[in-house]
Amino acid sequence: MKAINRYIVIEKLKDEPKTIAGLELTETTDTDTRYDRAKVISIGNLVEGVENGDTIQFDRHSGFGISIKNTLYHVITINDVVIIE
Image (cartoon, rainbow, N blue to C red; front, side):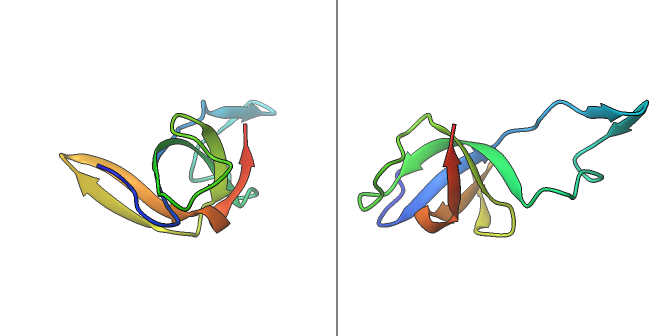
């Protein structure tokens, strides 16, 4: 699989549950942040500044999901990336 143009194929990373005052926050209860973490799987030929294998933070409301060989990936554009860790 290879992304083209300004698209980036990512695999979302699941963070360990956080505990605040004895309450465990899961992905569904942690809605204060707008961004999710992901690992870059493939970058398009017009993408600069991001490399395959990078860990990024991106706008969680952007892009779309795609299933390839029973694995769910997410496709975003370079404009959706806010941080490279």
